[in-house]
Length: 280
View 1: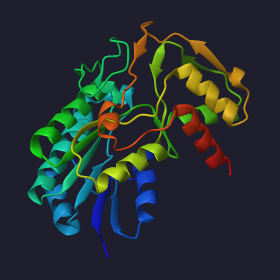
View 2 (view 1 turned 135 degrees about the vertical axis):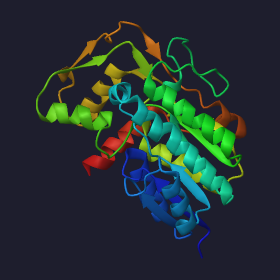
View 3 (view 1 turned 180 degrees about the horizontal axis):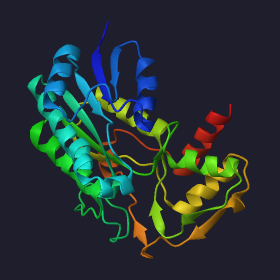
View 4 (view 1 turned 90 degrees about the vertical axis):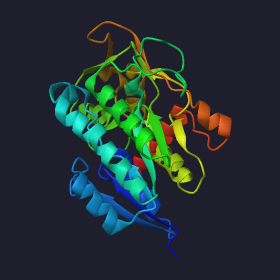
């Protein structure tokens, strides 16, 4: 018997693909996956999909996350990251469905220091972060049955993630640089998907941070990947970021800890598990 009909948008991305695999293993779920085949920036297309699929839960993983691309293509970035989220929020409210919106640590300016909680004030510094914050606001305003999840440095078995980039450089024997002044927390798509799944049946709403525990620099992240994948860790050189300004967007999973709903693993344990999994 089907307990939930779940529509995953952006199902070909790193989190969407992991969620698809995970949720389809549960016989109580009917899972619908879309990517470019349903244009979430088109309200008519979203309404049509909602009427056909009749989901009880929509998980919006669709996003343009390339920071440089967003800077050069502001309208498109806002159309996908903000308008798309708005359309899904409107449509899910119409049928009384729950929407789970994925967001990012880029909504913070990185200048404050310390661990940012759900109660700290966002101040995004780039188009990507601004457009994702706009998407958060639309979802918050337009569907009371919402969960907004912010995470950081998500990696997984998909094109374009940092883990894959580092491995590709190593395979080619290329030296590359990684910032020693950018701090956050690498988060496994597999671990993030587990948290998203736990929210499907729970009567929890609002904003949650969901990153693995601990923190590191981009350089330390790259070095760890090389070591775990049996490549020469000296291929990566520590460099300062282009603007030379230290940035930290480390998230504190405060709501998760207050509610006791879930516990994320340490980032080192999670990346070791991921590396072992893909080396099998």
